Amino acid sequence: KMSFVGVQIYAGIGSEGERLPGSLRSHLAAGMLSLADVRTGDTVLDPFMGSGTILHVAATTFKASHLIGAEIDHEAFGIAKNRLAGHGTSLSLGSFEDLDLAKIPKGTKLVGNVPFGNRFTTVRTNSLVELTGRVTREGTPFALLLDRGQARELASQVRCRVKNVLVLGRQAAIAYITPWL
Image (cartoon, rainbow, N blue to C red; front, top):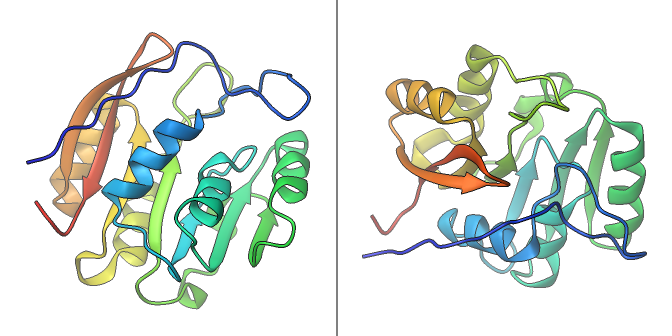
């Protein structure tokens, strides 16, 4: 059995005390990384990395050895780049759709906070289905936080589980495949 409990009242806070829009708190990132069964030496892909919270927790808490991230927002990318310096990263300023998925190592764990709020453009579901299907070959564990409707649609196409959650007062869901359920 599994329980996943997380509370996020406000956006994450950066090193200077500033609020980071769209940023997950570290404990929620850790919960998602646990669902994706991230372990020492793993490669983690966050195609919507924002300020890099998920990748930072993957490196520092879970000891992931290689981090791959993409971000379209220049400010958030700069924060992530500085935050993840020295952690074995491959970071791209641009859309996740520009990533060369053929170069993503087999067994890479996909963990991300898919944009679904007011500030960020919603990711097209067909693009998300393609990304998830190509990265998570052979049932590789993954965890994505996203809009509930999009999570249901994703689950119907890639056969994953969905758990409803609330983030910053918004209805959301975590779509995931984990090896122990």
